[in-house]
Image 1 (cartoon, rainbow, N blue to C red):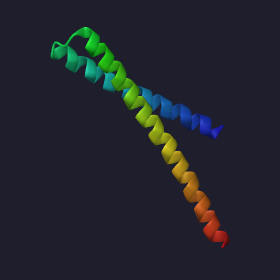
Image 2 (image 1 turned 90 degrees about the horizontal axis):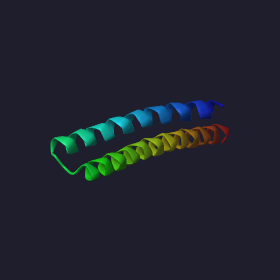
Image 3 (image 1 turned 90 degrees about the vertical axis):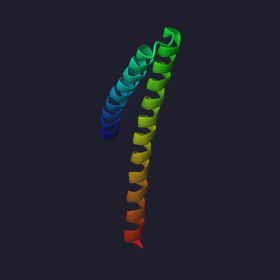
Amino acid sequence: MRWTIELARNIEKSFMAAVFGSAISFVLGFVLRLPMQNVIISAGLTGILVFSGFIMRAAGSKGNTEEKQKEQSNNRSN
């Protein structure tokens, strides 16, 4: 249960970061007067990249803390 709540929070934060990244890409493409097809594609790819990066980072930090806890419990028992 606890893991799903943390995952939901991480997804929400990652989604917001992806939206901001896509918006920045969209605005810059619009200001530079690039073709709209290219702007839309770049904004979509930016959103996917940012979202997946934050999700992988969150999953990695979760795994690292579990490994550290296991190592500490092993050291205590030895």
